[in-house]
Amino acid sequence: MLFYLLLILFFVFCIGTVIGSFLNVVILRAFSGESIVLPPSKCPKCGNKLKWWHNIPIISYILLRGKCYFCHEKISIQYPIVEFLTGVIFVAVFFKFGLQVDTLFAFAIAALLIVISVTDIKERVVFDMHTYSLILVGLVYNLYATIVQIIPQIDTIVGFHITTQWCLTNPVTNSLLGLILGVVVMEIAARIGYLIAGERAFGEGDTYIAAGLGAVFGWSNVILIIVMAIILQLLFTLPLFLKKLAHNGDWKTLISLTLFFVYAIGFFAADKFTALFDNIFVHLLCMGVLFVLGIAACLFVVKGLKNNKDNLTYLPFGPALAIAGLLLLVTNANLLLGLGALLHH
Image 1 (cartoon, rainbow, N blue to C red):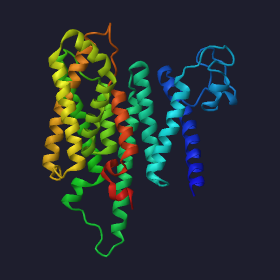
Image 2 (cartoon, helix red, strand yellow; image 1 turned 90 degrees about the vertical axis):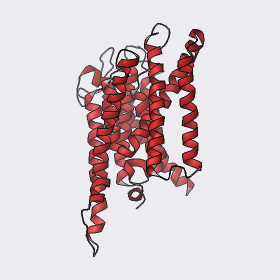
Image 3 (cartoon, helix red, strand yellow; image 1 turned 30 degrees about the horizontal axis):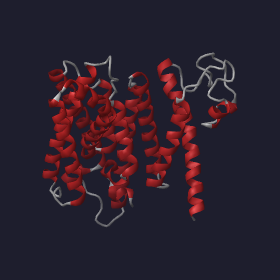
Image 4 (tube, helix red, strand yellow; image 1 turned 45 degrees about the vertical axis):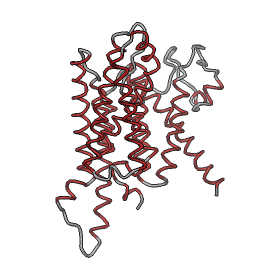
């Protein structure tokens, strides 16, 4: 039984690497403006059409020793990394969701988040076509989930009835509210940046990413994703930033970071090991405090990074959002779109 499971997971990994190879094309041609279908794959430096064995995910990079077969220029390490990571993420998605329609949607969501992350890291650019696609996939999935909810009830004696509670809690409503909340929260946070750093704390592309994540995961999870992204952003930038803080003696920022991390650790520990947050209003209030502390800490970090670009590397927030979405996608299927019962039917 274990052998067959490993065989299936290996097959999924291979499929993932093939999709990853395609995602590299999507990423490259988003910058060039070319169609993702035509012309066929070619070397971006010499323009020669690649042979079939030049396109084998990961293996071709190894066989070619990281160089173009024709012009011998170096091939970006991005290609095998994206292929490998896509394969790993697809395995994680499949292992979590199994063989069902939800898995296909999860694959599409993961692929879009990977593309968004790479373009933002590579050139600090978030393309509308990618974020709009994420929003569309989220809305379509929620529509599908809503239909799946309704159909079994139609066949019962009682039948399906539209109630106020259903209108407020069904997947489509959850998705639309998540989309709106993602936009509102990110735009408020971005404009707070004018007060602290004199410019937007986050780019407009980050707002679209949050909107897409809200459409996918729903309003109840989009704040959690943003908080997770803040934590990830701080972890990415913290080593560089702490070094600068120590040099400059910036105690205000050090205190804000300390408060956020202490509160965050206490929040998640209490949420996991106590019944403190069984009351939804208490849970939302405490999460709101965590969000405010996180935004304040993150803005201080962003301000410091932007004011010291000669010494520190400014990291975009989009990849942190995308990674947070991927983590939630592969680690907690019950939270996906707030459809725990549906995903285990």
